[in-house]
Amino acid sequence: MATSEALKAKEAKPAAPVRALAPMSAWEREMDRLFDDFRHFAWPRFFKPERWLAPKEDFVRPPAIEISDEKDHVVVKAELPGMSKDDIEVNLTDSTLTIKGEKKREKEVKEENRYWSEREYGSIFRSIDLPAEVKLDDVKATFKDGVLEIRLAKTEHAKRKAVKVQVQ
Image (cartoon, rainbow, N blue to C red; front, side, top):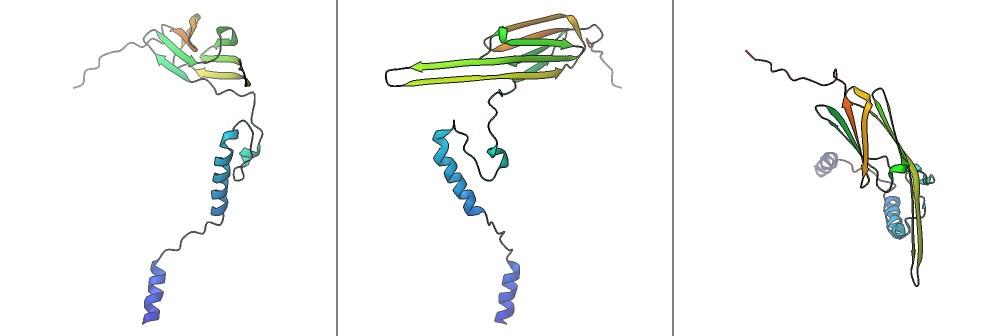
């Protein structure tokens, strides 16, 4: 009976999954922690192939966009920190708004025992399908504190008129 009870107990316990690479994962985490102070180097990571690729130096994160559909206008706001209005190009074709730009920034620190220089550059591109039909000749854009605001007037056809519907 002791053998059949032991056999039942063995059958009742689910088998634990074998994690053959678990020691390597712990080693990778430890190495990542060790090299955290050297973030400007492209240290290879072992378990993710994209980590072996060289970083894209000319890439800047696409701008965050906010679109508001107001009564008479469509308002688009784009965050473009570190850019000036001369670095930005805005195009409107039919119902598509395109924002292009190039970011160039240099920072240099010279102190008694320290010299530090940093350059950041890259281009952004964002194309947006507008939620309503707009007039191509009635567009106003302003740029202030790193935020581009574009106000596009809606066509008369696109302006929605609310009609009260009576429920019976």
